[in-house]
Length: 171
Image 1: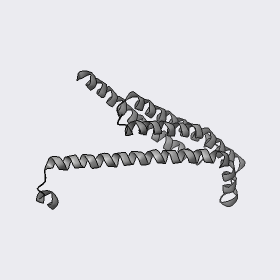
Image 2: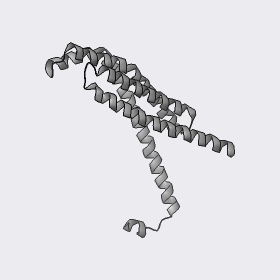
Image 3: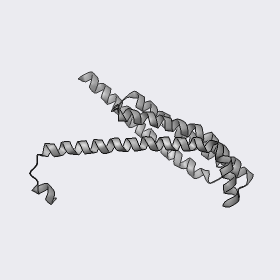
Image 4: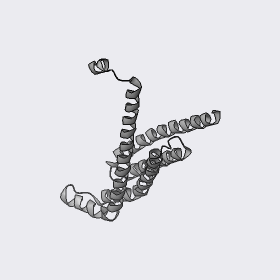
């Protein structure tokens, strides 16, 4: 508070500096998220051929799993992998559009809708696989909740696109 009252600088310049700092932070955050998504995609692809071996290793070192549990975990992973990779692909395109300052476009709504369907698919797969390995029910419920959150974000984006199109036609 003392710093704000003792400065003699122009408020307009401070606001401009604040916006520039925000935009720099915003771009950095989007780029970090973009690279994190790429890293997760690479990790999923790397785990595809190694996953059964890792489950067997877990079975030997940490906790014995019944054959039904192993099958449920492995089948769930392989069934979820395409949806996860598709969601990460959609997130990549969404972040690229955001970095190009193309925020309120129909393409972004479609990417968010795709992510929502992927979350729903993973939720259903995990809930189905939880009959063989009950701990997967938690992942299924979390993904169902995430599906709802992404749906809300998609609806807000859809409304923003409609408002943007209306403003473009008005001006």
